Length: 639
Image 1: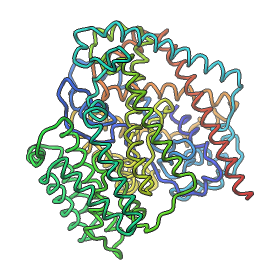
Image 2: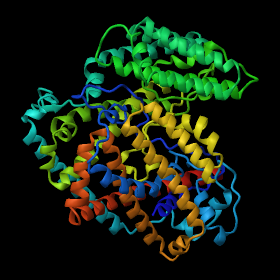
Image 3: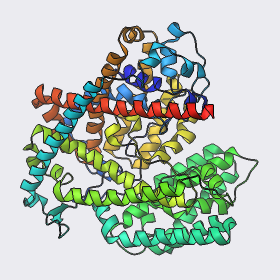
Image 4: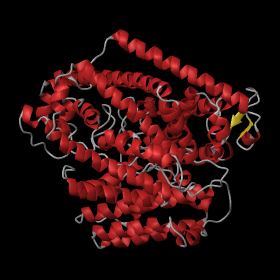
């Protein structure tokens, strides 16, 4: 099934995209945003924003979870593990391993003739072909009546599950276990509100005015500098950012970061990439392991609620940015960058604490433009993005008055009384909320960055549209960083077994360090590293097996249905996988037992069918986007 899912996403490439360079995707999933320290036991940090939830519950003997999840993840993760390799909707993501359709080209080499695709690009012969394989790809249409049935089933099921969650939230509002995290909300709504996510509450209550003031000041001074002395705007970014950091965290924290910056700058002067990367990883480790982390945290003056989150976010991203600077300096020995260039890059305030991270070469090129020109309609898109961020913030707050999706998983006795449909909806809604949180964060930051004439990394793809593991990361910037400096460098063409194994192990080792070493992170890294390599092994077997001939006998529509079924299984593997970090082992164990064991076969098959309907609707949306993109490109060619 992994072969079917990977093939379908690969065969959906468009003709015009075939001629462009594409960047492989790195095996970093939703946990790669930033890693604050472990919170108090009563607090909850979603996985998209921290690794704290991962480290808060070590693996224990006797858990049912490994029994339930290990077979599921080890077998289903490879369904799309090299979905780290070739997934993405048009205009969003690029393949993970070489050409977007490399897997198809290799599998069908005996049918369509040999291919020698250029590394990192899509072979034009594949894009131009009209083989049955391509016809059964993303452009395959289903009857309108069938799609209408899928829509009715999905919408009705979501409404039914939502009703169960709403009733459960009403029944549990006054439970003793809910008192700490369900508190009085907006007076004109007249209901209590779920406040279990302290980060969300701090951002948009206690620190709301501070964030607005800091970012508004950045935009104002940037605009004035651009009008008066545009050649100095990069200096303005650095000075304003450094002052904001010093005012928030104290002068000693600023000196601590400057020390790490200077150390990596000196290493860059030696021109040895291995030394720069090694020193960067050592600096990162110093913020993850005692006793160095305790000693360095003492440089922060004062005490406030988000202090530890800001400390670890600023330190972690500073190390990644400085390492990027050092490696880019080594890659361009003919052009020596100065320490001032590094400080301008590191202390850009919108990216400083929470990312996303842009590699130094991209940031330096964009910020060095003396007279940047906005594309037509750019300001309108910036306003729209800002407006959507505000609407999303208000919508989430209203939602938390009616659905206590963050609090219910903490009361397992109460959660165990939920109907199967409501329990499945609870698991799904936790991932949706985590995606919304990441979108809001990146939306606010990216709005400011685009006002500064930068092109920041795109926000994550909607979790509802994810049925492949490779698109479940929440920070495209860190994904690009790992790809550029580790994964692609060691993996080469990502087609040989041994180099791929070395590259993936090294990448996940660094990812583990970034998230903060603990038992659950080790498990997370192991499963994904295994899945990544297992996918390659399956691909090698598929080259010599009958799978290609089997699918060739299917009709185009039936092929799409089979792939959608595989995607539905993968979708729930993604949900189960991330629940471990979003909530707890115990809650994930409960969901797995109810949906896979006690609810089998009725609940299991019903939820699988509903998910299958959703995957088919996502595929239809992708097909529409692909056709629109193709028409647009054909129109441009005619002009």
